[in-house]
Image (cartoon, rainbow, N blue to C red; front, side, top):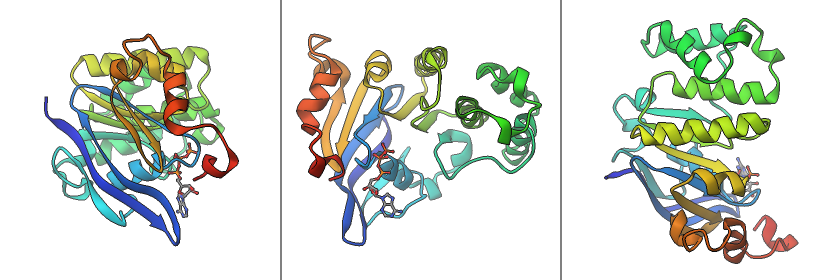
Amino acid sequence: MSDAVEITGLTKRYGDHTAVEDVTFSVRAGRVVGLLGRNGAGKTTTLRMLLGLARPTSGSATLFGHPYARLPRAAHRVGVSIDGIGPTGAGSGRADLRIWAKTLGLPRTRVDDVLEQVGLAGDAHRKLGDYSQGMRQRHALATALLADPELLVLDEPANGLDPDGIRWLRELLRALADEGRTVLVSSHILAEVEQMADDIVILQKTLRYSGTAAELTQGGAVSLESRFFDLVGPAAKENAHA
Ligand SMILES: Nc1ncnc2c1ncn2[C@@H]1O[C@H](COP(=O)(O)OP(=O)(O)OP(=O)(O)O)[C@@H](O)[C@H]1O
């Protein structure tokens, strides 16, 4: 299958600090791709550049062959959960999703569908501001799923989820990919990623690995955690935020 995402020589500098350096990888359509890296490794910055939320210092990032800003029907084709794209300010969870649905030209029934899908139907009347962290993650995912997109870009969607939520998320993302959708998901939870990702990208400012999970773990003979540390090195102070 063709590539849903192509990232080429992507670099981001903030002043004299380089957050992402010369990163190249692609995401094949129909795959679940786990984007891994320590705190500060550049995962969110990479996703932000992909989504047109941050301007690359150099290099390029495209979705279905276009930069996000020039991708036709981008908001329908790409579902996003990332800080900075969020609630509209409407009171309840349902009201917020209805605004998104209206903006996207979707029927109201989609709102009920995604609320069911993320397990928030019973809480949709409550104020978003009163949601727990895990409920906010589910709500963000509901927003991402509204338009039934072909590609999901999710930044740390498991943060704040309870064990049931994490299992549910894993099964949901796997099912979406099995239906032919593509999922690019950043995470710190190596065991979860190991169970759901077809492909792995490891960042530590530069690219440390891009390829299949099976190849990385030698078909499961070596744990993802052990390969991760081989590739990013020990958590010495000087490279934890390199
Ligand atoms: N707007 C900004 N201005 C300055 N530095 C930034 C900015 N955004 C990110 N950085 C820096 O870029 C580096 C990469 O940050 P980024 O948020 O991409 O990492 P991450 O891998 O997503 O980390 P985490 O796992 O903690 O979410 C960090 O050193 C961070 O401090």
